[in-house]
Length: 256
Image 1 (cartoon, helix red, strand yellow):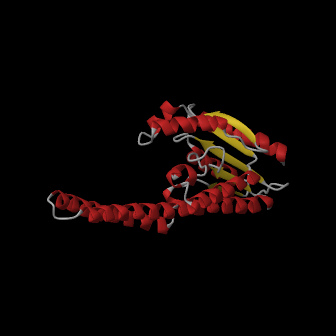
Image 2 (cartoon, one colour):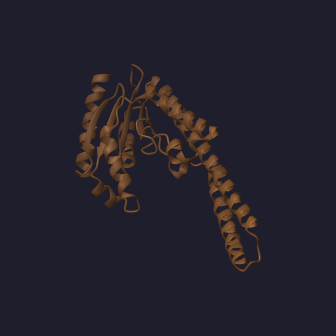
Image 3 (tube, helix red, strand yellow):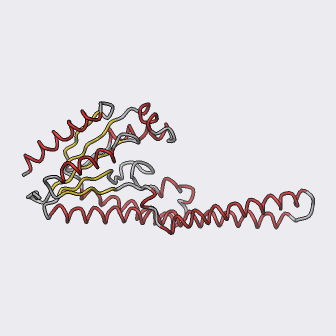
């Protein structure tokens, strides 16, 4: 296998839902691996990266929610019938609020853990590159846009708890961790552009408003020290792949 000199080489694919990031990055990895030391690194937040703790939390949350709902309904009826006093109902509602906040904390901690995992992967990827390897990133963390597109999520998602110190600190730490990703900006960035109307046809279970916003962000995202190529993801797949391979070969020939 051929190794790249001068600290290796990295390539990143970003784009809105349905743009083909994963499919193309896998294809490029297979192609480059024929003659180079190469590996793909996924930097998204799919279920495959959810902790067992979070999965367990979600199950417990559903069970707790059903139990509280049933209990609340019973007490509602009893309250209407004059069989329970108002104080007991208030206590039940406070319990629900506490459970909700508790799981907010758990989720925020999971999001912070996910950001740390991404940074750790970037550091490992850099070491791999320094040994002459080529790294292909499927997605990349960013801090330009919060709450969406592999950006920090805690502050945006839990803005109602921004007055609580622990939530605010978790949000600060997440943004700080993801902000360090700039140091590992990829050599090449391929922006796969896809109109929202096409994206939603490929991912009908997604939110059109979010897809539209992601398409806008794809255009606006900046990468320090990276060469950016804009790719039309609506063209036939074979043509798209051919265009990307050609650009990669041109860059590699200049880099070696």
